[in-house]
Image 1 (cartoon, helix red, strand yellow):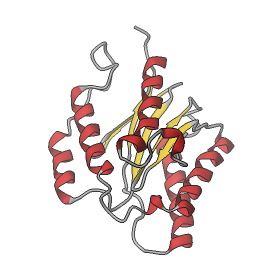
Image 2 (cartoon, one colour; image 1 turned 45 degrees about the vertical axis):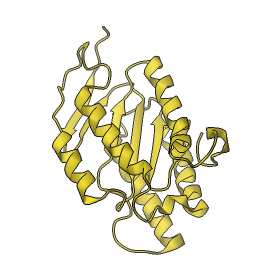
Image 3 (cartoon, rainbow, N blue to C red; image 1 turned 180 degrees about the horizontal axis):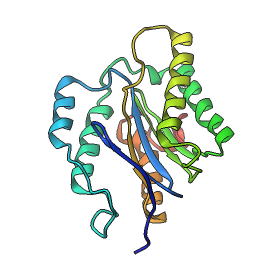
Image 4 (cartoon, rainbow, N blue to C red; image 1 turned 135 degrees about the vertical axis):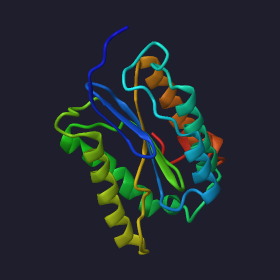
Length: 199
C-alpha cells in the first residue's frame, strides 16, 4: 500500500482531509437545501474518521458512505428554492469552475444540480492553495455574482461542504460515473449528455 502525505486534517460537522498530490470529489449545497430533519440525521451519522489511511479506509468508510448517501437522498429530492436550476446561475458556477485554471486547478467533471453541485478537481498544489482556500474562492465569488444576478439575501451556500480525496484511478472513474448519473437519477434528464450543466 502506498503511503500518503497528509498536509491538513480538520473536523467541523464533516471531516476535511487534505493529501498531497490527490484529486478531490466535492459537493457544495445551497443554504436552504436540507430540511431540519435531514440535518439532525446527518448529525446522528457523523463519526470522526481515522487520520491515517489503512487498507480498511482507502475506500469510503461505512460512516462516511452513510453520511453521503443520506445527504444525497435529500438533495436529490429538490428541497429549497433550487436557484441553481436557473441557467444564469448555472452559467456563473460553470465559469467560476473554469476560472480555477488561474490556480492550475482543473474541474474536468461536474454536475450543477438545482440545489447543489458536484465537482472533481484534478491534482493541484495543495500546499499553495489549501482546499479550504479553493472552496472559499468558489463559494465567495459565485455567491456575489449570483446575488447580483438574481437578488436575495442571506448566505447563498452552506458554510461547509463534503470533500473526499480520491484514492485510485478506479475510484476516479466511479466518481465520474456518479456525477454524470446524478441528473438522470434525479429525473432531470434521460441521459447525462442531455443535462446542460453536467460534464
